[in-house]
Image (tube, rainbow, N blue to C red; front, side, top):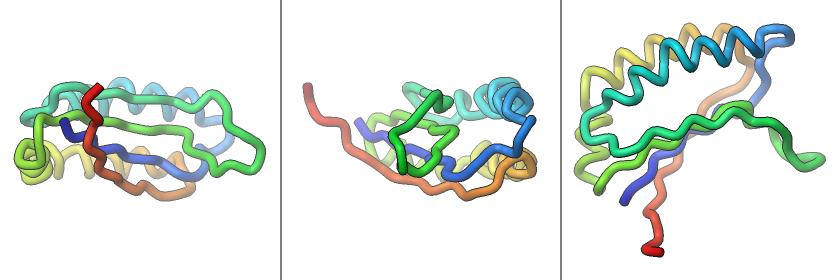
Length: 107
């Protein structure tokens, strides 16, 4: 299994935290769940962190069967559509998004 994670590093604009979360829940999660081949979508909103740790108010994890399935999702039109919607979200956020791909250990 392959997991692609998006880390939103930075800060939500003060006073817009609830709006940010609602936007993600209503606009983005439904799109992310329609990516072709996605087996699981996990959206995590931060509730705390260690002193001195960078702020990641949002993290997204999408699980795929293999690299080929991930690539099909990255090439799909829904990804471009979700990126457009994400630019709207970024109007409430100072920071950036970075992505990492992991292979799940067999447990």
